[in-house]
Image (tube, rainbow, N blue to C red):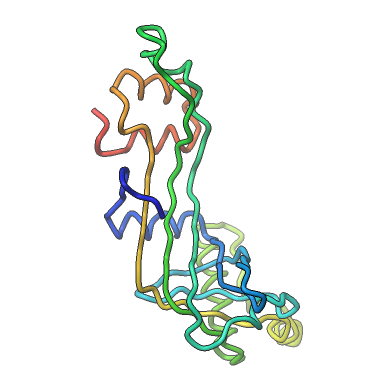
Length: 203
């Protein structure tokens, strides 16, 4: 990740973004030497990320024990219209940009086909996303033989995280008046505007 500026060094922030997004692109090198990516629901706990592939997806077959991998998780993002800046009316020296938040986790991955591990992983993933729902669904709600069949249709993957890179580009380099203009231009409900309002550098 290119982070000469806007580095989000707080690991708790990075973990929060990954948890909020709930999914990330797992990227490895395929057998032909080209990158391969699959979007997977993920859980990041300690130094491990757990996820699973559809068994029919050939990507997992290119992952051996200790395969180098990148997990790329993208948070809120938006095009920033230069007309939102107060500076446009003052001197016109403005250009468009793109605001975004992202976390990259680099490490080594391996495949897991153990049924007990898979059952635990999908249960934990489900519980994470069903939490807080009045009509919460649990894996045990489905017939046992049906769940067994679904488990046979997936394979697990773990990533041991060795490097964390995080970035939140939220117009921190602009004057306060310009930032206020961006927040207003995006609208009160836009997640990028919300992130800008809560950014610690915004006065």
